[in-house]
Length: 351
Image (cartoon, rainbow, N blue to C red; front, side, top):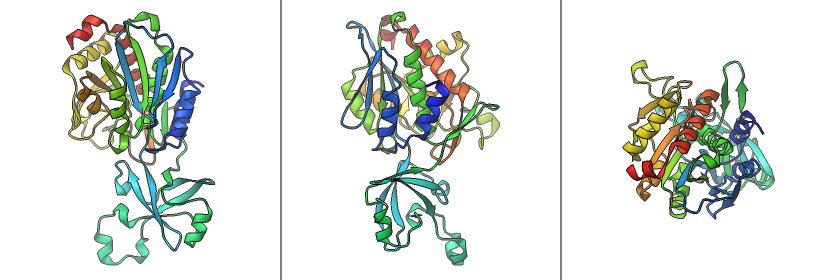
């Protein structure tokens, strides 16, 4: 498939934390001919070159395959569903959303319902909305009806959003760009790099369960002894609500290199090298310092692996529908390629 088709397919894939199966299958079918795929029991997907250079250094390319979602906690007597979040959700973005529940008989459509305003007391209207007060309604009227649809405790749930591409604006509108746009960038990087142009081995991994605590990357870091790591991310864009002089992650302004967040102070030497690669290759970029957030880089750097984050700005990440731009995705791919093909043992020893 071409790059845009791949992004759409990955966005549409059903893959909340813990059930990344559809994402894994898409990537397995779209590997470069020079790569092979292997899985571990956590559903991390490793992409290894067939011809590994025995004496070469190892560059780890990471993007997490899971998306924020929900899981069925219980089914009530009236047929509605109590649920828990998988990942960080703002309740304001959840109420009224259409969702899909993967049951034993297939996917079932539902609506996240909060108590209608018509039935609220004045006191209830003043209270902030929270997930505990919401239910998912699948149109049934009893617990037995809901069970008959194949839905039970432990079923996984994601937003019911189909990805669209606007040719005029060159933007995608869909779900799960945190981090499916990163998965697409990682895969395209492996398709495009010239294995003979550098001394190292570029190993890709689609890591599982990032949204619930970077669990997949913990396993990866113990499995792959990398010399450096590049984490692709669908990072929250700040150009919709931030004041102009504070914007650091704007859509269509280039790949974002994060210098700081609550999980990691980015390795200064590797960060400087990446920024120089962007400048030398005329690749648009942005540098961000974030007071919140975190990535798998927070895990890798604690395993003594110099790590950088290449972010693709995503408006309304952790929402049922997001935006991201094709040109930012391409900037991330181009910068990753430039970094990989510019690294050397001497440069690595300086980090």
